[in-house]
Length: 311
Figure 1: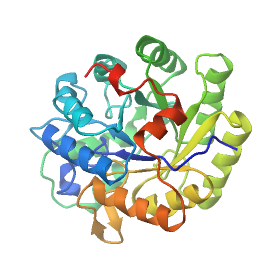
Figure 2: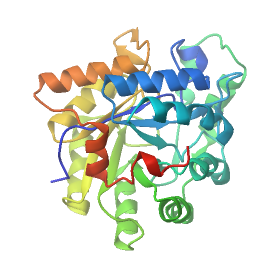
Figure 3: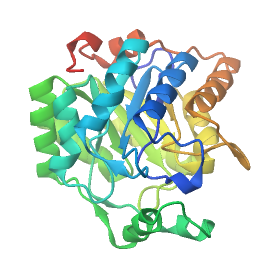
């Protein structure tokens, strides 16, 4: 069985998948990211997973200067663990994706455990008009796009960010093979337990958002990592609340946020990240599950602490 204490809620505040046309509530400017992240922490999120957007038009940006406009504010206003993306946005180089994490030296970063097709282009059919011309272009390019994270890329991230900055990772596993990639690095001693394994369901190119797949990913993770990992579940779009609730009942932690889903319920846009955090918190507490504080999450995942970052 995986490591278990209380349920750790991660909130992924803005991401790089959804575009401004899709929801008026998607945080885009540094002010909006800071405000939404702080509200999510107040609602019960122990970990805040963060991307940055260009404040002019909302497109994803790797610019450390933009990150530094909201990271200190979030740290000052909350005790939450700050978790910065190393996935960045579609089409960014590894250097661009690592620029902000290497500058900020956070407690945690996300890391995709393999290269994969990452198809967002089906979302083109849902909208007739766009606020910005970059939006449909960004979605269309994913028809012929591979998100790259080779073994060499992963080695570099582990060395420069893990060893170099004392940062630990949210290992994003979009398919069963990614669990075996993670086991490979664990076997080589490049990764040390406890692991934080984020199993991701419902992205086109990754494993589907089915209960059978949820059980299968847990079964394989249990086999590979035993009691040296904490399991978390992320499901895209309309699958978010049902699948993560199911995962929590099975002993997992959960991730919500407007990066993963813009919705609170059928046909109802979430008006902010805090609404999704409050919703899953209410569901979990009604199931007699306890919510982890940021410091409990730090203890579970052996993080270095919020004082030992560079922002």
